[in-house]
Length: 319
Image (cartoon, rainbow, N blue to C red):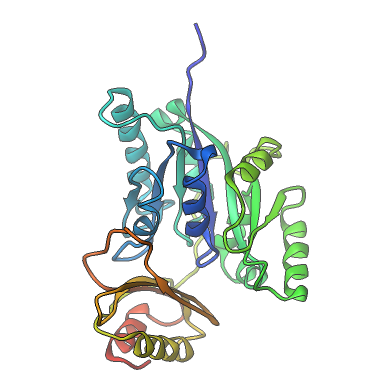
């Protein structure tokens, strides 16, 4: 009897703001992942990442308001099972890969364990874990946030992102940090999400030993203490006043804010993508043809200070 063909899985992880979604959107447009199914997990009340990749491939699946390693973990397994049997019974088109993008505060260890169990373990095969690592912020994040450290610890391939924006000393520090934490792992540089899917798969083909923790007993997720998320409605701004409000929010909450991201409708009806990490704010036109969310605004993820306080201040126009 021929061996059962399992659906390959790529697990894409990386800390908040490190560029996962931009890479995933690129990969889904390339031949290497033609026919892939994307599963996107976000922390927050209103999802956005699925909107940014919707036009790139088959409709992605969004696991809302939770972390794949914790609250939404059973949803992830159930989703993969459902997709497999929908594929088997031709209720959906066949898909060649399952690409799972975790939220930036997910610990991959319990996810990897869950993917090897039950029906999912029988019908799917994890081909590798790729971790994005911010060339400027990564060395700091990995010392402060246990999720970030676990993401590096379990990586088969590390994508060093935003190398174009990093100073030479920061880039050298990131490379030294990764060499010390995950020696032997392939590190691939990326600027503006320019790493191709083919280059990623080539690196995964030479992957090192299986990720730590795959065959251990029950694994508890590691998380930053005091992490919260909240949604801040924003609507009716012109481009200048929106940037002014966001700049004030970043300045007033720089010690607490980890990530700010959303789709915002301007007064003229245009939609813009807003993304921010400490010290970095980007506002750009929403992708042409991208579906719009039911609510205009941004999701805020913070620690040390309730995200709801930052969201309330931002919605009032000050922080």
